[in-house]
Length: 325
Ligand SMILES: [Zn+2]
Image (cartoon, rainbow, N blue to C red):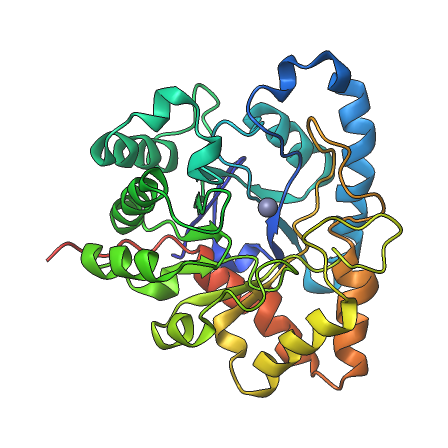
């Protein structure tokens, strides 16, 4: 049986339904929970989050089930017991991440850890559980620190992630698709096939011109169009925003060149951001309110939409250990 770890237990990939592959219940910088400016009561967080997840569940009805991949790694406000209660309340499957959004958000304790130590940490969270929650991570987050260049710590985390991915079978997703050559080298050295890696944020406004799409495609990697909805047309767009049509046409170029199997799409929205105001009006439901209608208006077939949000995602999330030779 195909297996995927969700916060409420391991399920078959065929039960995932529609998958939003890169989202956040709440993402923040380490320590934001100590800043009194941003304190929220549990009731306030539920109030901000539950209606968005209920709407997501409603929107995915035609696909039979809803899966929300929570891309917040260790040290960035990850809260597994909270995710479990949200999943229970709303019926949305939630897949939690181990790993780090980027080396620069790893606390000093982990910053000094060896590749072996980090590998053990990720393997434990995927195969035994996260803290005392009993929930297992289903995916490994890694990332490029600020500055668009891989730092030594980023490389150490990527290598540990590659090893943990081979052992446990959990896939990897990256924050940013820039400076990918060192990443591709590490995956090759560690014997991890690149279809187990989703290079994320290939569609954001600030990375354009800095991503070697050909190298990623040639390596067989997956490409993440996962910042849909961070549009410059918003009243107060973020610095990584992009014109809606420009992002859409970038995505369509991939779909129309037969590269559908290598791409995944998501909105990277925060239900209830931690320690920052978030981007008003942007939620995971953008996928249904704007993206899918935009694709349909461009004559993209429903089977392609299913391929993106159901089949590609299920294949990617299925735990697939790679035997050591
Ligand atoms: Zn994200």
